[in-house]
Amino acid sequence: MNAPAPDENCLFCKIVAGEIPARIVHASDHSVAFRDVNPQAPTHVLVVPKDHYANAGEVAQHAPTMAADLITTARDVAAQEGLDNGYRLVFNTGEDAGQTVFHVHLHLLGGRSLEWPPG
Image (tube, rainbow, N blue to C red; front, side):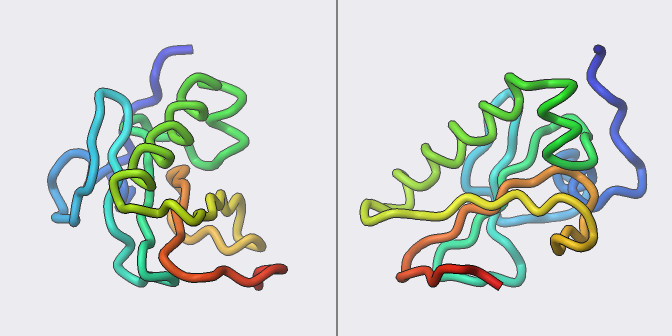
């Protein structure tokens, strides 16, 4: 499958394109990581692919190596952020799971003790 075209109405596509500013902490050929504007932990970074996929299931089906890249990027950012005691990775997939921007994104959370179960 060819990479999907950017969605002109997608907030994260606009961040990837540089049309909307974000606090970028890491960028590679395939992904961008930036600070969440509504952080839920001292470190809350979103890792997004540069290509537009609606959710984690879609990226896993159509671009499984991209799914792996998102996790690898999150690991690298966690190391860069000094999250040596641990961190949480979360994909919200669909409205009922709390997904509000329908461009797949991986939440990297850390910097404090995280409770279980979440939400």
